[in-house]
View 1: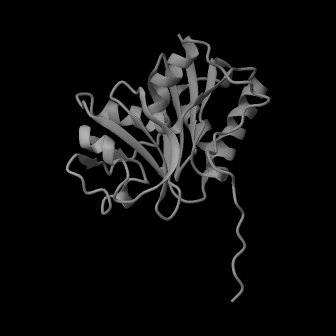
View 2 (view 1 turned 90 degrees about the horizontal axis):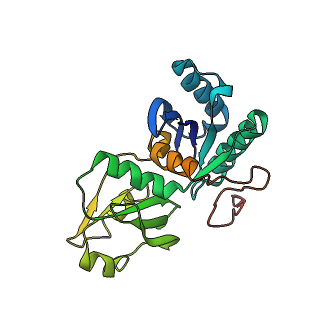
Length: 227
């Protein structure tokens, strides 16, 4: 028996959910640019208020750990760690791409191909990983530049559905017969519920003091060119 607050801020989606025993019971989210810093604590409060629970009733806090937006991840993880410190609750970290694959399978329970979750990393680069329909990792998380040769071997032998905000820009490049694309959004704290519950039951907790998001790539600050 566990009640878990779940936070997702790795992409444009700002999302907070409450789950009880692996089932989502409350959700507040919005897809928009640059709202995470000002909205995530409000969304958490609204989700909590809708359940009638108090923060002391929580058993853990789970956060989408990345990869994804550098700023978004810092906001989400900082919020989660602050709550864990204040409430003396354990911290659970959920891989963002696996969360997305879980969301796809919840929407498509009879699917028997592979799932390639993609997060846009600008231009033709994506953060990506491939999972089977049991959410086992087929290809580990990596940053890839997508071209017509990408995933060729996997696509020769499997149907692969590409999901996430990085998948849309690949539709004109990945033309293989076995390539499928989903336009639905799977970046939602509600899709963390089963994964977070399994982590809680196995006591897979993070060190609140030292945990950092999984950025995958270093943040590079660029300076606009003078005109």
